[in-house]
Image: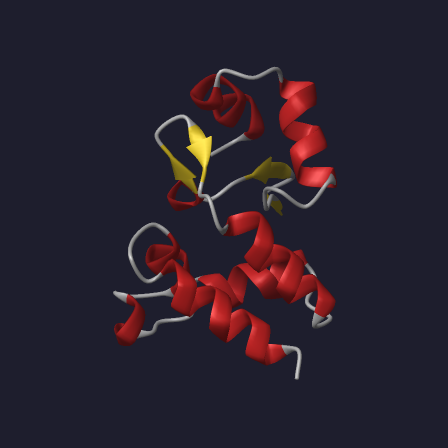
Length: 104
């Protein structure tokens, strides 16, 4: 989703969404020159609860945003398809545990 669409979905200003990206609470990458956020990382009108923590763990392990995005969408059947999907349900703690283990 382009950032203006994210701002609308979250009922926030575009500057607040940009701040969330800068602060590491939300992941945005460039696609065809446009910064976008994967829709699965949003839950109704908020960011997935455990996403900021997982992004922080991945950054601490040396991942940049593109690498973090690849990790979040790497197929993993034990996580209902991928870590990004697992974050949206009861497997969120397992996703956090796996992200934490990367740093060691």
